[in-house]
Image (tube, rainbow, N blue to C red; front, side, top):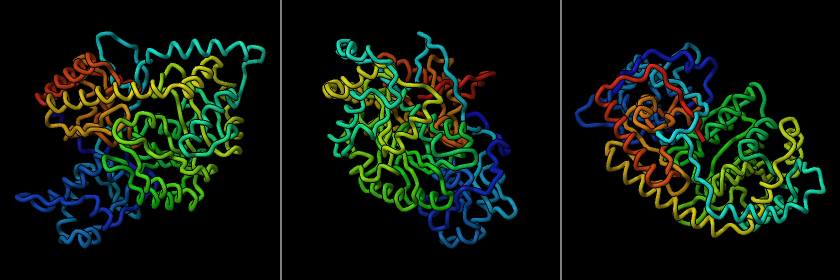
Length: 496
C-alpha cells in the first residue's frame, strides 16, 4: 500500500475549539472490545482509536478524554493511555494544544475531503461516481400523458414560483397516503432536491453558523453549507446507523441553525433510522427548537422489508421537521423536479429566497412528475426488483474478487459502502481510472477528510457495467497492493 505521511495536514488542523467533547465512558463504548492477545495494550488501543477516526465513528476535531479519564473508563493504567496518545500524536491522528486539550485530526495522507467536478462521459470507462438509475421504459408514456395535459396550462405565463397546483396536490396526496396529513400549501416544488437543500440552508444559516450533518453524508449538503459560510458539524452515522445520543449532545453544544439527515436508505451507507430513532430526533427538534431536515430522496428505493415510516411522523411538527423529496432517484434524474414539505410560513420564505435563484420549474416536467406520483407505483415495484438483483450481483462480485474488503448488503438505496481495511480510498480512486472505472474516494462523503478506508460502489448500472467495474477495481487494488505508482495528477469527479 502507498505509504502514509504522518505530518498533520494543515488544512485539517482545527483552528477553533472542537465542536464536541467525547467523555471517557462514551469513547470506551465506541471502541468496544479493543484488546488483542499478543499485542501491547497501548498498541491495540491505538489501533482501535485510529480505526474509529478513519471510519468517522469518532469525528475529526473531537476532543478526546484526558489520559486519566480514559484509563479509568477502560480499566487500564494511565501509562497505557499516555503511550497510546503519544503514538497517535506522532502518527498525526491526535493534536494537542494548550488550553484546548487533545483533538482528533488526520495526517496529510489520508488527505482532506475530495473536491469534485463533473467529467465527460466515456464509453471506455464505467462511471461509478454517479449513483442514479437510467430512465424506465415507461417514462415515455408519462411524457405523453403530460403533453395531453399541457394545453390546459398554455394560457398562463408558465411561471409558478410555488409549483404547479396539480403537482403540489399530487405531492400532498402522496404524503397523506403515507400517514402524514399534508395540504398543498405545505409543498414547494423545486428544481430537484439539490435546490431544496440549497434553499433550506440559505433560509436558516449564514456565515459562522453551524449546520449538523450525519457522517458520511451526501456531498452536496456539505458543499451547500460551506458555500453559505456555515460550518458543517459531523455526527457519526455508519453501519450501525445514526448515533442519536451524540446528535443530541452535538446540538446542545454547538447550537446549529439546521440539522441535515438522510433517514431512509442513506447515501452512501444504505442504512435507515429506526422508528424509535425518528421519534427521538423529532423530539430533539422540538426540545431544542432546531430545524431538522429529512432528505427522503431514496425512500422509494427500500429493497428489503417494509418501507420506513415517514420522516415527518404525524406531520404535527412541520415548523421544525422538514421533508425533502425528489423524482430523480425514484424515476429519472433528467426530470430535475424536487419538493419541500414544511410549514406554510417556511414554504413562503423558501419561495421568496428562490426568487433570487430561479423563477419556477419547467411546466412539462412538473406534469410528468404529477403523472408518475399518481400512477407510478407499478414502475417503482419493477425498479426495486431490478435494483435488488443488481445489488446482489455487485455484492457477490466484490466479495469474490476482493475478499479482504468488508462488503455489507444495504437494505435499500443505490450503493454499497465498502470497507477497504486500510486508508487507501484516494489512492484507489486515482489508480482505478487506469483500469477503466471512475470512482469517488470515501473522503468525498465526509466533512473533514474521514473515510479514507471506505469506498462507495453504486449498483445502479447494468449487469455488464457492474462486471467491468469490479474487474477494474480488482485490477486497481492489485496494482496498489503490488506497490504500483500513483498517477501524477488526479481529477476527482462529481458525486451524486
